[in-house]
Image 1 (cartoon, rainbow, N blue to C red):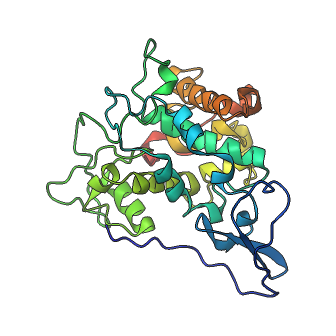
Image 2 (tube, rainbow, N blue to C red):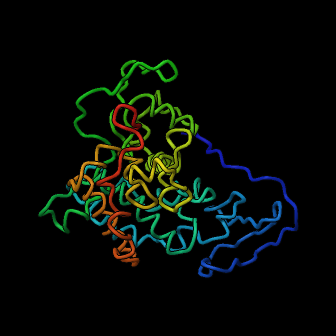
Length: 319
């Protein structure tokens, strides 16, 4: 597609550059050379192609240090089955390549190794639940079928809304595509602008390029949908302080709040519904397969959004 992904520039340097330093802490297993410098009194790092913008997050492990090909294969073990609808499309390399755009911003690189692993499992839990073709008696169980789809198979409409900034392209449909399926012309336009790709005119790119599809999904995870609201990343790693109104709405840091931000009142505030429990089950399943363990998902009130009021009610939610 010839797209050049914009990376993020960190502020001016105050201090010496130390080449090849191994940064201690939770990245003691890292096999990539780490470059370190001091910017305004704070240590920032670069680490190979995977975390190449100067960032404090790049001083931690990169995702490939703790999440490798065999684990991706375990999580999505049935995605290339002959009956899967996107066989051969989704790969570990497409995920890792996509994540490199966001690791300097903290995606999978925030906090301890334990937190990093949990965030990757949480993000992929959402992805798996939204792209699954699993069912109760499916081979391998219903949770083994994430990444079965790359796009909506039988769209019921064109998903075109009148929009001055992002008008629909004639003859183009904006049905669900990608790892966290994108719907509606405005959302394709917003994400396309962020990734510097013309998704408004070419939404099909999200079902043709798996790296781009993962980038769009990670952008959604990392980006607040409204001013003064957190992102799914923020609420998961707790880079967010709930207000009094949030507390009254029973919103708190944790996996439950990620469902609130990504799915709103379609799954949250509805009690103990199957749609919510399906997402939770994928997250717990992935925690087990990654060696973290589902018991680390937290107590029910952190894991669930059953009683949470939606950040963005249906009339204003962004998909």
